[in-house]
Image (cartoon, rainbow, N blue to C red):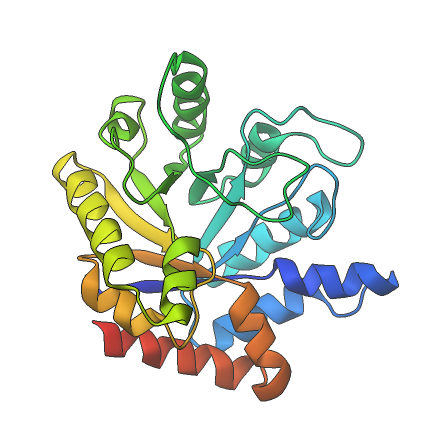
Length: 252
């Protein structure tokens, strides 16, 4: 199965929020990405509404459903509701994303920087996953390469993992990524042996995608936002999405 591209449009909302108002329009940007050939749209709403907000999630769910593409909603299932943020489970219940990617982030983090460690009592995580699957969501868990107990992701009911590729991207930029690729590949194989599908995301770019996909077997989906939106400032969304799709093809 070919790797699919889900574009994270959080950064469009960051630009909009820096000025207030409605421009640039998150839904229009997502639509442009889909027109260019992207296979889905990802957003990671934060409780502090620093970028995409609940109303964006609702609007993007309508767009993706009308286009027949995947909507991937990321978030911390344990973050409590607050004004303007109904909670991750509530957003999933209202929008029914095709995929819910659970991330153990906190408000203090600028961006997601680690995965679940699967140590200790996982009862609460198992309950959250069961609730999301009952809604019809495929559940993916954000994990670190080299996680020693990756099989426990399957034990708690997840159907996929998303490899945190930040360390790989840093190693690629230094020119010594062989060990990072090997760690991702080994984790992917163990996850697949446990019956889990493998996604990947964080700091993946047009430059480092082919090497990653050549080294890591059977990656089903990559979720890319920061680098892709940055590149689009120079090239435009249409050309950039097409170049990322070419990079994925070169890694296949």
